[in-house]
Image (cartoon, helix red, strand yellow):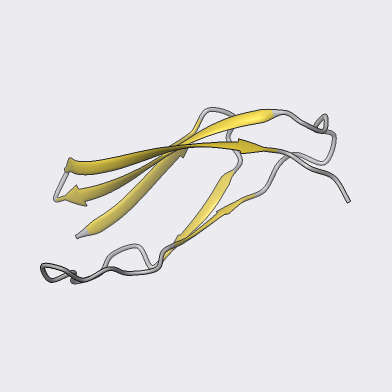
Length: 71
């Protein structure tokens, strides 16, 4: 299965791993890296859609709301 993601603010920079063999009943950790622009306003919300792909077709997805916090 392949992994794909999109976000509405263009913060997405990486997904690792980009694919994995997942057997029935198994799970896999996937790291999605988002990097907001340097001039972003704190508490800006971004919607990330993470998809499990079979070839070119999504077979599952999760929608996650992200909130920018500054240090």
